Image (cartoon, rainbow, N blue to C red; front, side, top):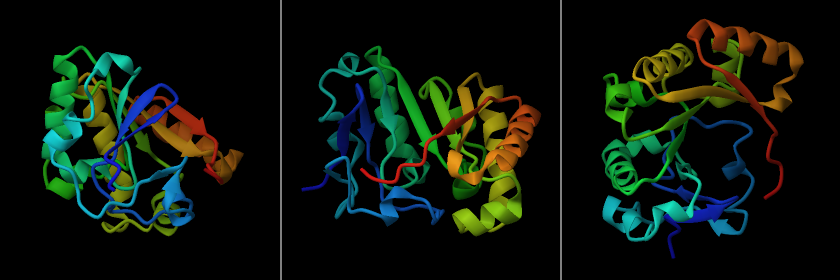
Length: 198
């Protein structure tokens, strides 16, 4: 059975796809077939309607979060449809992304997200484009690092609550450099613990 939504810490997470433009060395999906007991590998990607059917009461959750084993913006149309449904019923939406949506769709998608996605967590992960390419192995190569920064700037410009995140395992020196990048983009930086066991 495919897991299209899963509950964790008072939030409902939406697993739209297993496809990703990154192959990050630290990604939890490299370690396990499941995440906190949920099997997130999909045999079939859900339609927006199949996801919506699993959200009978949006206000039951603190947030509806687009975050699974893949990059949610790959399925932008479905993401927007579900987010529109949630917002129409008074819910709060968040997107966890690698920030490569503009590259994926060959246009600036941030205006489309505005009004539908309340919060966006962009995984910065590294302090420079060479290190990012080594750690995250993006399909777009070195272009990905600058593009995710442009994406974050676009989100802020469109009034979305956006921040960068890094995993604490990269070390204090790199975290300090990431703070400088975040400041240059005008968005906050959040440091999160690496998930080693689910």
